[in-house]
Amino acid sequence: MLSAQDLLLPAAALGAENPLPPLRSHQEVHEVRNLAELPAELRANIEYGGLRSTLPCLDQDSYDRTLVDTVLPSLVLENDHARAVVLPSLGGRLYSLVHKASGQELLYRNPVFQAANLALRNAWFAGGVEWNLGSTGHWTGTCAPMHAARVEGPDGTPILRLWELERTRNLVTQLDFWLPEDSEFLYVGVRLQNPAEYDVPAYWWSNIAVEQSAGTRVLVPADQAWRYGYGSRLDLIDVPAELTYPMRHDQAVDYFFEPEPGERPWIASVDAEGNGLAQASTERLRGRKLFVWGEAPGGRRWQEWLSPGLTGPGYAEIQAGLARTQMEHLKLPGATSWQWMEAYGRVSVDPIAAHSDDWPTARRAGTVALQDVLAGLPEREAAWSAVIDAEPAESLAVGSGWGALELARTGWSVSAGTPFAPETMTDRERAWLPLLDGQLPATDGVPDGTLVAWRELLEKAEENWLVWYHRGVARFYAGDEGGAVAAWRESGDNPWALRNLGLVTKDLAAYERAVALRPELVELRVEAAVLALETEPDRAADLLQGDDPRVQLLRVQLALANGDAQTAHELLAAGIQLATVREGANPLTDYWLAAEAALGTDRPVPPAYQFGMGGS
Image 1 (cartoon, rainbow, N blue to C red):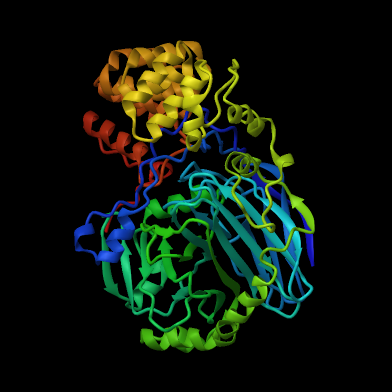
Image 2: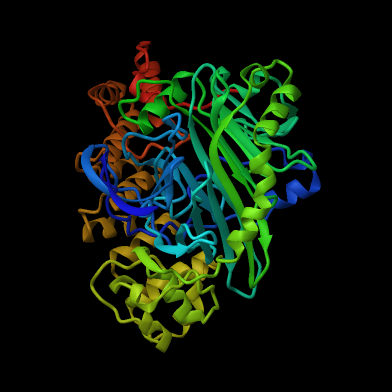
């Protein structure tokens, strides 16, 4: 059975997109500092396909931390054995998977929706199963809608299909959720279509949040793993018993398991009794990973930050990907599709074997418990392949119109099973259609994210301030900084071109003029103040107006720069709730310690400020 239902959750507002284009990617915590030591194939994959910017997508950084009961649309697949809940407006997240006979929720089901700064576009939320594609990190569509429809399954049961265009790579993403009538496992068929005639870097990781306890153990058919911590090294290590218990780690760490030749890929998280969630797949999805936040104060603080009101031990993540590690991209050839089948369901492993100190015994017990599911996956994928191109029978949710717009430009051929109808375009997408005929009418509004793939059309278009602005962004994205600066100067006295000039050339006067033109735009004011603090601190104070937490934090920085540690301490002691604090950054603690050192005092860092994730 497939139905549409309302899901009521305490939720923080996501807010509007940031109109300032992300000319450069956010700091990426997945730097690898020992590349020269790695095997050639692994090193080549890491060096290939890095994303210069998330354009044409804009950042999502206007969310808050005020929880209000909110109705979210959900799509529910259900049979006598299991119930799966999918959120089409939030990247197709598999929010819940319940095993009915035991009553067990197999995933970590976050009781709230709270965005935090962990994704490529900033906003991300914890829980369930997230589908990550495009580039290293949480994907650009994780807090965005997808198209959804009902499709007739090969066995007569309905398939829930979700699809969308991943805009940084122009890959068509298809997710087919299938819960056969007699199955305790949910099957998810995934297809990535590259409709272009050229190769595209491909990346995929299914990110699965599972509840943890002191007795939780992760089982996987591997004897070695690539360890990646905040020291930014990849080191191949053996898999000891301690590694596989998430709550026995003090610090946040990733373990990318080295696939064992000849074994079908799977991973499971089981409790002290040997029960829990298993994920398995056909061979293309060969990578498996364990991520833990760690039990140190920083890890616990992050879990509470992502799930306000958290009282239990929180969650760990087990993941499945196309490559061995999340630092790699693979080459998806032009006019080519990749597909695979995933299975999600409850596994029961003999608890003595599951928790054996002898790792080969434990992991073999997992393989035995999953043998029927593993053996049946190729047949399930073959059955799904018969309907992979079936046209949607009933629309259940509408995603964006960007796919339809790209097809209007390129004429690419995509599957009939993932249509991008012209009527899905909104005013936002239709505003770009005149560019196909050489025009982009100038308005007094806020420029949208530049369609950087449309650079050739922008260069040929009739000139006005908006065309020059977008030309500049497209040129900068392509590596032509000089051409970009020239274009923004031609664009004239508008806050958007002036901001880009300020950012790229470090021209504080350009930033100040942009702020004067749009004083209400906090993101612009914050960027200008950051540059002032770096170059001419005396000019920062005038920019730091308002009560936004990002402004408050910069006031602390200014006070420290001016030698006024007492004011810095008072601002911090009053409390700053920085909604957009970034994973891997810890400015609140850093400034607190700096103020204490300057004052000659040693007051402990407030727990609310302890976001530090460093360590071994």
